[in-house]
Image (cartoon, rainbow, N blue to C red):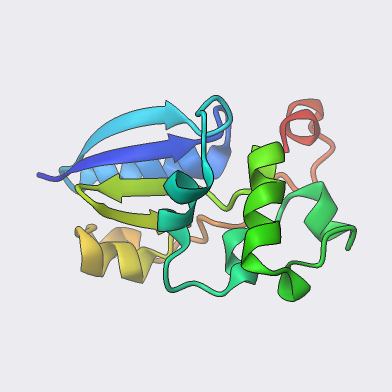
Length: 142
């Protein structure tokens, strides 16, 4: 069993599914609100080590989807500052196990890192299933 600090956006369907996968694989979760955390540059940056800047962003965030923010053209320092000002831009979940940090939920990478049940690794758990839904709740929280 691995203890995972799991930063989520409360109410996110995919974060709920991701947590279930982790628990079903035997992991213990310390669930925290990504939006309420008091992030600083260094604390947030560790989650993005090795990832291109464009992959730091929540692809479902309205500013990303609309093209207002061009993640592919963003420099690291500018990206971090934007995310500190607007945590909804942060790709989620953020997960920490010991001193190792990850952003997003690439199932094969998570399975290699801490383990998942193989039969659960076929779901898309990063694309918001409500992004084209008329759900009032989802549009307010994205």
